[in-house]
Length: 319
Image 1 (cartoon, rainbow, N blue to C red):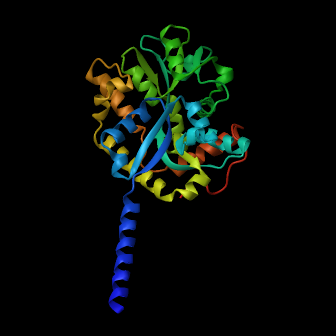
Image 2 (cartoon, rainbow, N blue to C red):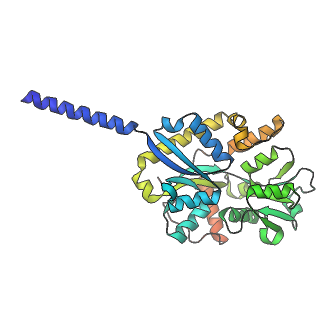
Image 3 (tube, one colour):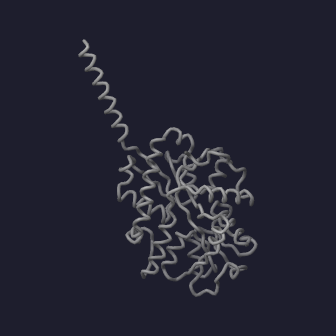
């Protein structure tokens, strides 16, 4: 009798251990709303090619779309998206207007803003461009508001000091190439693609003013998720963060991955100097840790200028 009981106990223990091992090593699917621009393309190419998702017990499904659509898909739960890129200014306003409860779950991209002009143009500073034609993002979007904040820090009023032309970054670059505008504002990663052609040069005062005022990189987008999902998917989130950290570390330690993905990233560099500029710009935007100081500074400045409503209390960043 005692022998039979002992056998049963051993079987139960072995079954528990087997279940624990299976559950700990089970591959979990994760659906991500991803922005169809260079940095995310590079990030997830590195993850997939090195099978970092599988290594960390995940199988990623990526839904690619433009920036605004990326955020809408996560906010509305389109096709059961679980995590997505989100501009922090847009996140605050989405939570306030649509009664969502989105939270930032991991750092994504710190992307300084620069002005791009044609290489042969006479413009050297933002002051030189005052009164001229400037390409900006669509009005009242989070990206547009971020540009306005940066302009204010540099001592300019975007709407009063320039003749604005609205459009996507790609449209702004096309307008500039055709001579329909005199300059356009781009993120450093977008700018790197155009600068690599050798036809343009940057005016970096926006980022210089930001770093001087905040003492930190500009937090362009983060990864976000609904709090209800976070509460029920702790293991999946833990694996996602570990995978992300390893991928970013890999990119920073192996900047040549930019060269390896020139076609994917649409980099048209014709010499090493141009390629080095694109390489450095793209590698630098990835962040391994949250910079709470920069987020707080941006939110306070946005609230001060009326671009967001009431700021949230604690809990914006998920543990």
